[in-house]
Length: 341
Image (cartoon, rainbow, N blue to C red; front, side):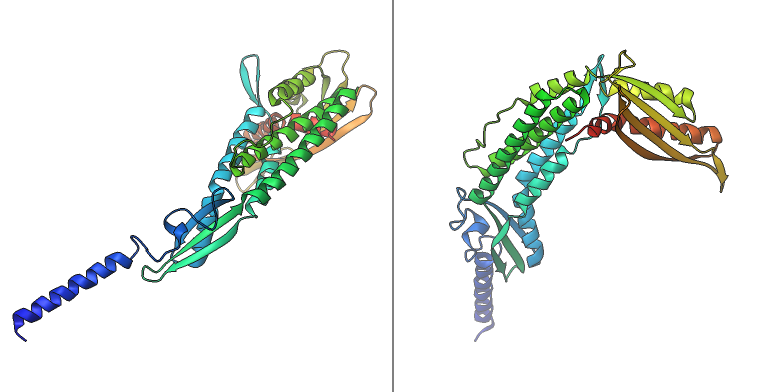
């Protein structure tokens, strides 16, 4: 065979090998399951939510498929978090004040996690030539939707019971605690409703029975009816007293109006700053107690205080700043929690 013919044969074989590689590689993947490149015939969109994952290992591909499916649900939880933060921010005298974070987001997250745990791996495929694994995650719309509807119905029933108890309650703090619990149930429900709208192909979910905006306004109105006397005891009373009054006012209660339905006492026990390794350390505790006008205890809570600085005055100031932060963020929910369901 001449040298020219050998070169032609080699070139033709090279072209054939190159064409074969292009047709069976990662580009078109003709032998791949339908869901790798498009819609799954086995897991139709009307019956399932799906997610796809690709990786060099099968376990990673499965994890990525689950994460892909979860994205839309996580967006719902993220939106609900913003709603809860909005609920805990109230406007007073033109200023925005921050109340403590409610447990609503945690409740929505917990219930949504149960939905996510229903995700299954419906299929996997190994592209041996490309050394890649593909996974398909699936979530049965009907099964998850039924569970969500059942939970929403339970929250509506819980809300109805709480609203009824609140309307019959005469003690204002207890009345407020029940109203707030009803609102939290509906905020949780709202998050699950959004999740259901993602799951439900109609996008409808279950129409809410309660107006959350109205419920928010009611809780603010109830808090504004509660008159609370404040007392400061222990160390640094001259600095503690105005902090307590300010925190009670920021919580939405009427401060030191007479006659008062409740008495809130803040007791601060703080050690003198001591020098250790070049730093002044101080520690102690803040104790908050609430009693009704008759002197009956409603509730009590204790927080540990610990601060350090390079001077005694600064260590004490940082302890007071810590105390102020605790009362600003947690006093409202703590006091209401004393009378909670």
